[in-house]
Image (cartoon, rainbow, N blue to C red; front, side, top):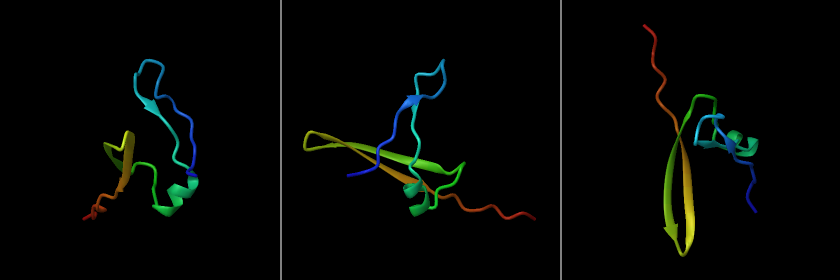
Length: 63
């Protein structure tokens, strides 16, 4: 079975929620603080399928 995390409120005044990314997923996909995630949500066979993809932006070269 997959990893389980808890969901908490992002801030006391926000309606947004947040969760943590399990360290195994962080390591497997080389995710770092500041990286972006792309979320795809769809329904299949009566289930909600959420696909999260790390988006690596190219490193900007300094001149």
